[in-house]
Length: 203
Image 1 (cartoon, rainbow, N blue to C red):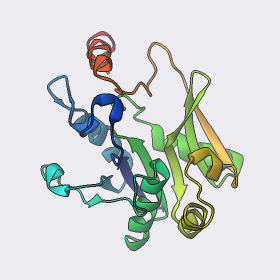
Image 2 (image 1 turned 180 degrees about the vertical axis):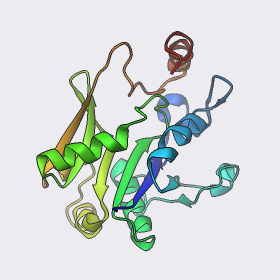
Image 3 (image 1 turned 120 degrees about the vertical axis):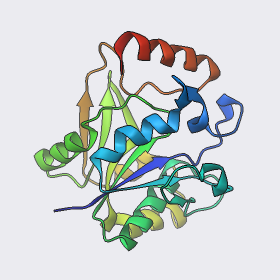
């Protein structure tokens, strides 16, 4: 069987949240990162957190902390690449990425990605809901790590969709009712909305 490594992408600057780690913002009494790890861990074989800066601030989490493979806060693709490179050393075939600020993503995310790739004969998959793609949530083949590295270093590619356009991408569509599972806590005011969602929908 293919082995899957889950990668929580926490390498951003969180400017709209006022800086710091969005994953450490508390939701329903716990850091958002707790909710993310709790959802993704059962779906994969191993977990890592992609984060830059002092890894000590995440020492409470018993998972490897992996910095971006490319310096300068190069965006989510740098985290995808870091995850691929780490997964290659772990003999895994696939990396599954999730955002650190999105606590309600589906509990069958990986199964749906696998099905989408199989159905379409695709190289990789990303999520969509409500007519919008969520490229940070993706299934990536570790075998394409050198291809991604070249795209980022030689071609200066930074946007996920510019790289996926070079390959066969399957899109796994998820319902956005009664709530959008890819709602992300991007700004301070989003915390209150997330708390409401927890209470109303018991997510």
